[in-house]
Length: 278
Image (cartoon, rainbow, N blue to C red; front, side, top):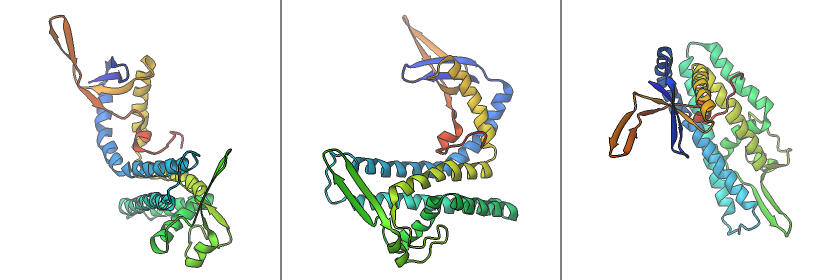
């Protein structure tokens, strides 16, 4: 098996070197681990797409050329509901995963609960959206107020809900401890902060706890990617199954590649942000 660099934009490739036997063995060990993790962490990919759709629509409303047609609140509620539903699915999925994986380890189960409590303590926005999902499911849709004002020099946008109105409909806010005195809640800003916590703290925590071999896998493929990038920073690092097949017809030579798609940035390709020193 060989290490291959491929630049799709230029249709250029380069055989870097033969892989060593221990590198092939590492690849075979990591392959099923990454496959399982990818299946599980596709939820974060979906969450990222849901947030991007929400953000793109909000940004479109900040464009003075965008014409309102009366469906803005409906679209915002739809996109927010999609996001909240996926975020809740992720939390439920991994909470059950922890219970199953560590059913006999009360300390590990407690560590997970403490981690969530710590996130809520350090980020009121994250805590609010944990509670807000319950409100949207049981009491009402998420957008309480929407206002857009366009002038010759600026566009102002308000997508919000009133804390007093939320508290009046339900007193159940166990994570954020909403009192109703917080005033107008800017949902765009709060969701941005909460999403950042989901992708940069919650995702990495469950990845490293449930899949501890992902860190050495990321280091392994990262080193090989760097090796390919030293030849061409634009290369995608691939493996090649065997010697290249070639066929010559007249003065034209055709090359047949047998590439194996492997991760270049394990965590990024899982849809989460992890630094190796985390």
